[in-house]
Every structure is written in structure tokens, then in C-alpha cells.
Image (tube, rainbow, N blue to C red; front, side, top):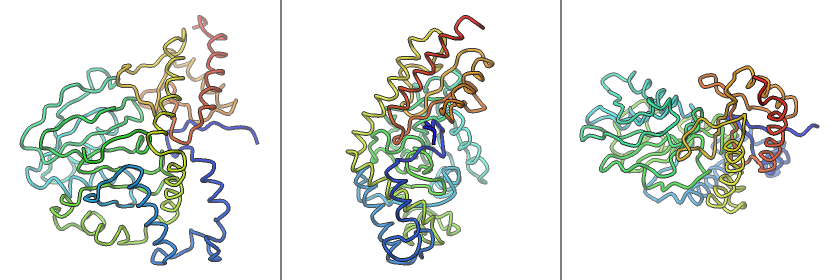
Length: 362
């Protein structure tokens, strides 16, 4: 089989050791004679899987005891609705830091909730979202502030969390959770879709401060953090297989040295590509240097036809998932935790070859 380097933004590359473990256990989990996809979510086998997954996630992220951990479904997109329903109940106003497409989607969904108003307290619009906003106009009449920590499409990311005075933060950490260190206590809630740094699609991780859960109103069961916490994420059948895979990824991360070690490796991978882009006569990064993501790295040639040629050439040579998002075009390399540094080095070789062939042609 030809070597493939998967730069996809998600579903994304998973650790090879995890996939091999899944393969060996797929037909009979722990000699039960049943696949992990067949075991009951009420069984002791699954309870152990879920308990270990939560324990290891708490260890990796240093999650304080006053925070609940939920393993849910519906993707990060459902959290655009769940968070306002549970938390926007005093002023009915939410402050949003608009840093691009996924911030905008969160704003759109919040505004669909009757009586709730989404307010932009900062925006990167003037820079075309190539920079993060530097000033946040917070006010007293906000229930909370929403922030997207890493912008998968635009390629920007927060290294440090903005200070919001007495307003708690709800953080969308879908694309860089476990890939760089943040202090959980800086947030009232964190949520993340699994399909980038945690495991297969179908699982959403929510980390939420318990006092906020207790204050939430009476809501339909599957939209209520309180009811989901009380039932340990099992109001209905949870995504058993996705939680199992996530648990294996957490174990892999611990064996690799944890988040701080992984972040160092991620920064090394990203810096290799950024150094090439900054010295290239053909390729370039459109993102402000101080706001660059180490996870999702967009780049362009400045000519859409040339971009298409490079993507075609890369794909033919086993570099898949490099086509940029339709909203911004160009190329994008997603360097999640499981992506090997060798893949970046091989990408640079083919970029250099393409540059020698095409610079000055267009």
C-alpha cells in the first residue's frame, strides 16, 4: 500500500497504535466474544471504558473536581444551541468574539433561540479574519462570552485566553483540544467535537463547571446539561465505539508524555512549514504571524489555477486533504496530534519541487 499523509481537517488522522489496538480488539473486546460495537452501554465493560476515558481526560487536561465531564452526541454544532439554552437565562444576551466561520455559525444558532440576543463584542472582520481582534468590548449585561480558540478555516488561534472580568467563558476547542495547553479554570465550559484530535466522528466532549450546571433551567432531557450530568451522559445510548476510541487516544497521549510534550512536537511541526512559507518565492501564509495556528495552516500561491495544480500534484503523490476550505480556497495543512513530523518534511519536498517548476510561470 502506498504511503498516505492525511492533512484533512476532520475526520482526521488517528494514532496508528490506537488503530492497531482497535483492530486487535474489534471482534472480541476483552475476550467477551462481542465487539465493542455490540456491548451494552449498561454493561460493566462499557462503564469501565467510560470511567477510564474520563479519568485520563481529567489527568491530561488537569480538570478540577468542580467540573463535570460529559460524552455527548450532536457535534460541536449542537453546543451552539445547548450552551445558550442552559446559560443565557439572566440577561438573555451572549457576547461573542467573532474570529471567523465557526464563531459566525455559533452566533447564527444563538440568535435562533427565542428571546436570546447574540452580541459581537469583538471581530476580526476588518482583517478578513487573518488576525484575532485585540480589544473585547465586554459589558455587564452579558450572561457569558463565547470564544473559538482555534479557527480551523482561517488558521488563527489564541495562545492565551482573553480576560473577561466577571463573565465566564464558553470555549469552542474542537480543533486544538489536547494539542496545546489551556487552563480549564479560565472557562465556565469547554466543548469539542472529537473528529480532529480525539477520535472518530460521533462524539462531543463537554467540560462544564458544576455550579453553572446546577443553575441551568428545566429543559428537554437531551438539551439539559443538568439531566445529562445526573445520568452520567447515558440518558440514551451514548456513542459507545467513539468513546472507546477516545479512551485509547487519551491513553496514547499519556504514553507520549501528555499535552505539554505533544504541544512541543506540534509547534516543531508547524514551525517547519511556516519557515518554508516565509522564505518561499511562490507559497505564502495569509495569517498574521502572531496569531498563527499550530494546528491548521492555510497557505496559497496567489493564483487559484496554480493552487489547483499543486493540490492535484500533491494528491497524486499521497498527500491528501490539502485542499483549502471552500470559503477561503488555497491549501490547508492540518497538523493534529497524530500527524507525524515526517509528513511535514515530505510535504516540504514536494512544495519545493513544485516551486522550482512553476515560480515565474504565472
